[in-house]
Amino acid sequence: MATQPECTPGKIYVPRWVQLAVLPVLLIVAWFTLGAIGQVIFIFLVAGLVALVLTPLVHGLERLRVNRYAGVFVVYVGFVAALVLVAALVWPPVVQQLRNLTTALPGMADQAGDTILSVQRLSDRAGLSIDVQAQLRASLTAIADRVPSFTSSVVDVGVTVVRQMTYLIIMIVISIYMLLDAKRIGRFVAGHFPTRSVSDGNEYVRRAKTAVVDYVKAQVLLSAILGGSVGLAMWFLSIIGAFPSGARYALFFGVWAGLMEAIPYLGPVLAAVPPSLVAVFDSPLSALWVIITFVLIQEIEGHILVPVIMGSRFRVHPLVVIFAILAGGEIHGISGMLIAIPLIPLVKETVVFLRPRMQFEGWRAADCGALDAANHDRPAEPPADGPSAGD
Image 1 (tube, rainbow, N blue to C red):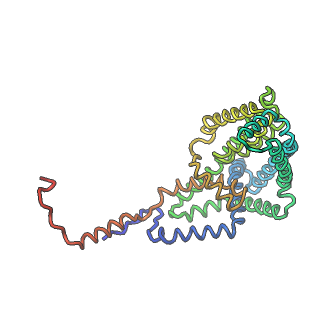
Image 2: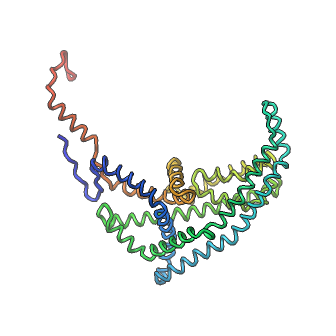
Image 3: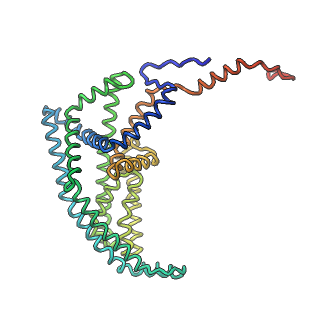
């Protein structure tokens, strides 16, 4: 008969019946909860991430003997002022360059004469009755008609929609409360940690906070470096004549690359799409130079910048990242995809921290116990003829 394994002190013991019945039910309940109050969870997640990122600044002011309430006020005013300043300096020219690009898209089909003629000859040889220039112009006109309305909605988001403004205010209020009560929340988590160890709870709170804050800081720095590098590279290619349109849209290309860099693994590919497409209309050689430039930038990023800035601590399997991005998009659209990314290091840190502190009751022991009981009731088989293995 199998013996019941003893629970190791300081570990979270999960018996077999919980693994078989309770955990699947909890997953189902969590899925329906996300569907029912996904917006509420999203608001609290964003507010929590903002509070985690701003917490070190508040602690720094506290070390300078600044009252916590005053410190939260100063940090928030500075944070909002920095966002407004960056948006005021960068956003208008970026939007203007994007609109200029969409306006110029239909005319690019007329400028890319050699490329279109080459494609047209290939089409004719293949026996396809396609007017490549007409089809290309129609496609670019359709894109140009849609992009301005998209950019207008992006510029106006949170300004003209009352609901978005309400959500934004609620996020700010929640994050302020989280900053003010950070110590109390930390003590609550430590005091109710599943291992019943206050030291474990304090260690988890510290590591989870550090994982998110360090990831956000490293990602912002990496995005700024990559975005600036792409913008300067496109401008330089235009100066030397390798990519004539590069300088005209360099700021947009750089900001786009910086934003895409926030998406692990997929971001570098998405960052190269707009400049490569524009370069094709200048000439195939321009597109080749742009692709080579992006390959060089990504090689420098992958072998120098990411190891130095990110290190190995935040690396997870690409399939995990893709799953998290798709799940975030399914739950809350584009904003859900973006918010899922900084949650990856938090989930990873949680799994790494809890793995040695969890004890699952094994299933193999139960199977072996049942097999031993069956063998005990089975009559013994007569010994086989011939010498034994020990002879």
